[in-house]
Length: 54
Length: 446
Image (cartoon, rainbow over all chains, first blue to last red; front, side):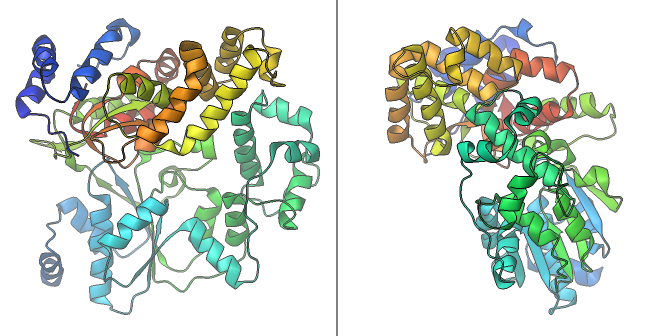
């Protein structure tokens, strides 16, 4: 089984401000794996890490 | 050059300049290949070129594990190259020499009877089942490259039993026996994969061989030094080093994190991985965890959400055993001799963290969350596990060599306080582990 993540979603995920929109779009999608992955990652507070990737 | 181009065209491979220099070389070399930079394709092109120049050339390709052997068997199909894991190779040779290894699992109680328990406690701290595995690895290490273990060492009686075949040998134990046998192999080329994590015995053995050696690996992915006491060839040998930096897996965007980690580790901006405009599509997603208990914890959560997933069930039995012992101890059904020393799961968890037994700490955490339901849930995981699922929940160690479109390695791994602390302290192995995790995605890390 494959789950192809649409390029539009990948693009939305690249920007912090459009991440919320990606989550909203995924909430109504058929396969919810990526939706829950994003929900889990959101629950971790940003201040738990000192290493800045940007 | 013309001939080389011809052979490359024949095999439908377009080599980059970095790869071409490796394929054309004819001396002992080390190939430091970044994640996803076509390491196997380069080895394949190398072998093809040597066989084109001399069809009678004898080539041995030593791979890391059985999975890699299966993959290499397919890729090298039709080529006269002997492919084997180093352990299988050693095993077969010892059998030919009439010294068949005695394999099996070492029993903790039996080992404790033979060696000094106080000495063991001094070295590895606690004596939990997980730590027992560390002891065995430690014993393999101190047995290391010396031909004999000093008679004064506390582990000497144990090695005596190994030699007599009175106790089951570990894989590294018979590998050492083979490496010290003085045998000379009839090969023109020996190619060693995963050279960043090999035993010192293997390195010494290969260096004593007359063949041309090609060591391939990624120095930034050396993650078994502590667990298995391995060495990184790139830091101990001085053969000519080549680098592979063009990724055929990940997008430039996706590699930003990996490059940042490399810079953090090396403080050298000249070394970085070059990515693709768009990452390769695999149709797979993954969440990576630090421990096996963390994997199962997350899989139970995923099961509750009604999603399909793939987990490696190999470790399920050992974690179920720990949880069963925890449950028996803290419900006073049957107190475990070690866990029973602690008044509460909280105290045990604190102790586990203090001796860096993260697997035990996470197993306690798992039990604390699901209590009586933990064992039934763990049993259910095995029955609904779907190897064909597009969603993989794996440990970072277990994810090595694999790739996915989207990866979350932060929630269950990188953002853990213990990992953060070690990363901030610039512990090389934890930085490498973060690098391994950050290079699994082809499109995006979330």
